[in-house]
Structure formats: structure tokens, C-alpha cells
View: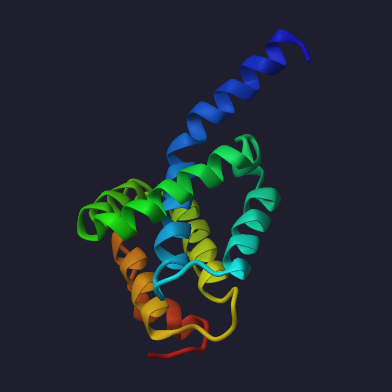
Length: 146
């Protein structure tokens, strides 16, 4: 790998670190919404990290570590951690494509283990609000009114 390729890779990781943290915040909030993180939700997060070019520039183990730290925070200091994670997510509110992608990630995680539970729906709705998106419009577009 040439020095120039290394610089490009470093730049991509630097510029997308904000998005990575927002994505891992979305994963943590949605995965723990029903009180536990299932194996299917963890597999879904791994699949998301593998599939998304924008996240692939990061070490997937570090990304999972970030999510695990967020989940631990949600277990030990839920109100404080939720506020911090919503802040990370809300930084993407002005970026339509980033917001759309974060909502898709959220939906993939909440649907990973079958039917969407009410607590997962609430977590999804809170993510929508952090992104300045009307959750009712999203559910309506998906044909799943509340």
C-alpha cells in the first residue's frame, strides 16, 4: 500500500468517525431497547459493518467495542447515556443521506429477531426525533402504522 493510499484511508476513517459513532449509537439504542441484546441483533450489526462501504474503512472489532461500551453505559447510567447517544445521532440530522442510512440501520437491528416489539418501536421513534424526522411518516411509508 502506497503512502498516498494510506493517507486516503486515514482521511476516510477520520471523516466518517462521526458517522460510525452515530451508527453504533443507533445499534446500541435499538439492540438494548427490549432489555437485552440478542445474538441475532449482534449478527445483524456485524452484517451492517461488513456491508456498508462507509463503515468498512473502520476496524469492525473497534466498532463493536464502541457499541458494547454504549450498551454498557445504557445498562449502568441509562438516562445520561441515552442523552449522549442521541446527541451523537442528532449530529447527522442535517444530512439527509446519513439520516436515512441511520434509520435503515435502526430498522435492521429492531427487526433482526422477528416482530418489532413496542420498546424497539419507541427506541426507533426516539432516533427519528433525534434526526428531526417524523416517526409516524416513516412507519406509514413502511406500511406499519402505530
